[in-house]
Image (tube, rainbow over all chains, first blue to last red; front, side, top):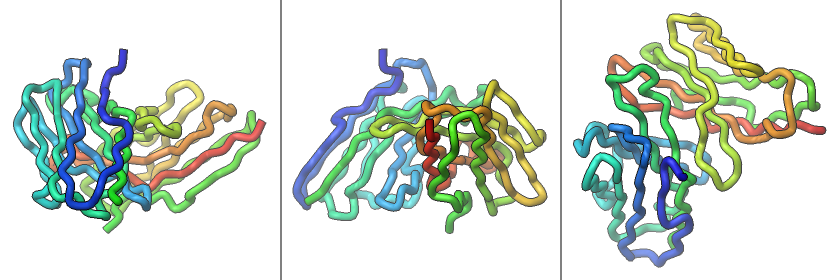
Length: 116
Length: 114
């Protein structure tokens, strides 16, 4: 039973298209994240939501819009895709800052996005 | 501005010997450090962590050492096993100022030779 699942695992698309990546966690965690791993292997945080509320929004183009319909889901929608958006996107969750070990994130397997 | 650095992109160790992975950081506000392990086509998985109030934390074959004055931490794996072959990421957070935000290094690929 996958704890953090994200779909699709692979996504190949043309420049200018709009695409979404979905994420769901069944751990009962309060906080969810999107991280991006670029070609240089940097894992950088993009967004963090706590109980459906945006709490971290790094310097990310506003073509990227996260949506959290409930605390178990955090989807990432990307408009007008560019070549530089090609990366692996990881969803993660954690218990939330009120718990000990709050920084222990559980990651999904990643979604590899390729923009042609 | 790379606040967490893993200067060795790769490391090869003989099975049964000790693996030592290093990590340096620049942000003195970091107060919690973690190591994650990543296999190909999988997400990073949590391995071990240490709070800045400690200088050592041990969990089975894995020990993390923290030297705050040098802003340096290391992960020791002993004895190393072929199944330990993976990419290891060091991560840090400044919980008082940035909450749950983790800053990651670029990883060190460990290969354990049978």
